[in-house]
Length: 81
Image (cartoon, rainbow, N blue to C red; front, top):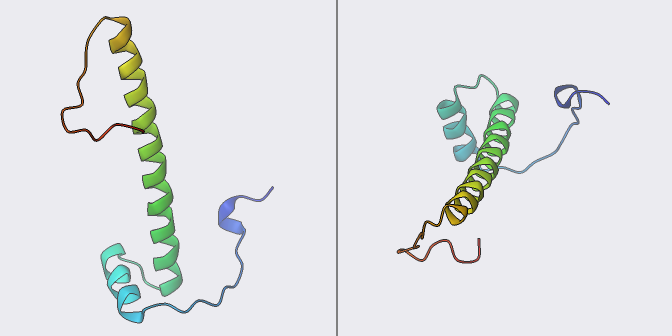
């Protein structure tokens, strides 16, 4: 299988040009294609960081329970996650 960077396809997209130019400036990209590529990489990286954070959170909770600690979710934000 080819590395992800080599698997490119032409796409026809209808995008908000103002948003695209702002993103291009924020990301420091030279081209619109580079802007979209960098934005996608950031989304993918953020999703992986979120996944790792939840894994660490679950490990912490299991270790706390084994140690007899009681953790209260005083803000009620963790129910169902």
